[in-house]
Image: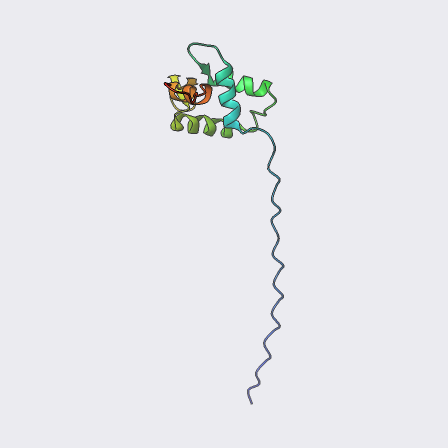
Length: 115
């Protein structure tokens, strides 16, 4: 009568590939490099984005390869309030350290009587 064909053997599942975690690069982050560059500048009007990129490239950072990271780092420093615009908008223009961040990073509070 009606013969039932045996079900074909299921193909063995492929072994899941393990994602190898890339080792995190040692060294300062892009934001730290930008803050160092801006604080080192003695310009009254701040540092332009182009000069900032040149300074990062001179320090050994590959700006052409990581230009998106530089741009996002500048934007995040602006939203945090670490950097302030002197000219331009977004990640373009000139930047300098904000007054509040300068006080936070540079001045050491003394714990004495009458301070």
